[in-house]
Image (cartoon, rainbow, N blue to C red):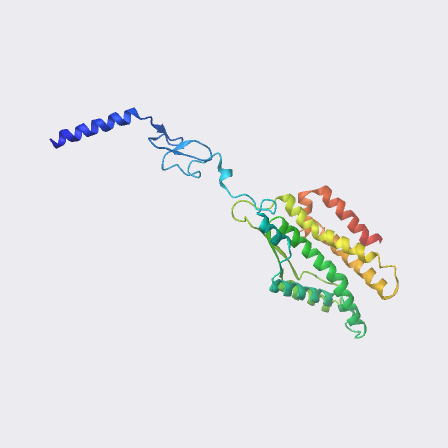
Length: 278
């Protein structure tokens, strides 16, 4: 009786299967009663090929997390990105870099104990505004594009800056004490900032130097101490803007040039004219 019963059950099962529409997997052709319908391409698949990666889904781009920018962030998070929100350690690193640069650019007066304090103070004001403005411009715009951005010291750069300044008597200065490190929040997911965004972040620093230079230029003809501060501030910041726009290596100019050569020329040509003509 048992064999006959099994044959009956099998026959009934076969009849049920024959009355049900079977669906073939789009990849291997395996027929299944309850296929997995992909939510991205809408095609049926077997259990083995149900994941988008397993069937080379044509709608794969929709499965990835999009680039996070301030424009598609929840409103409660936008303000925190726009505000400086400095950590104490970052402020300390900016302060150290500022003091070292001030020292390096006044090292040519080290032999004159009367002139050095004055030139050191002038360097802190003139170069300090340009340096801080340059780095904060990078930092602010990068955060506006949803990136993680933080200023960090470069120890070797600090030593080289001080070493060159002391050895050359302030006539040759390698000023690279640190930089703003930028990382897209979606880094590692296949997405990052666009070439245009990278170009805009890069050009913001030299533009800040140009604005600071023009501000000092307004006082350069005043004469006396104010005139000295104005002319020094103009000269230093014009040079910083022009130098950083050189399209080479890790300088801002290379990233701007790669993004848009016209924009690069519109900013670079006036910067170099400021250096040589004004």
